[in-house]
Length: 88
Image 1 (cartoon, helix red, strand yellow):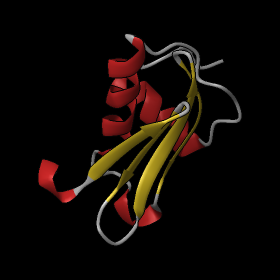
Image 2 (cartoon, one colour):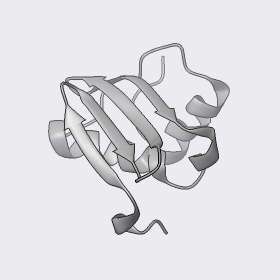
Image 3 (cartoon, helix red, strand yellow):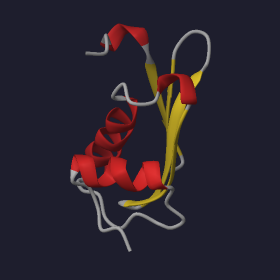
Image 4 (cartoon, one colour):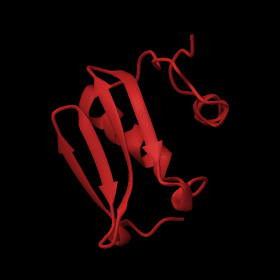
């Protein structure tokens, strides 16, 4: 599990950013409840940060809608794995 004291979340203008004291871990860009783009730094992938980002969008918007293309194979696997959105 990820220690909640090891990162900070900033939210501004449809962007949710997760960072620690040294670097940006990842971010998600959303319009309303639709995910336009999500990125997690390679060094932090498969550790739960993507889910944290999606959960923050859910807290703000109340739900997750469509996931916008293009979606990488890893991204597609991620969204299917957490059961989020409608992948075109």
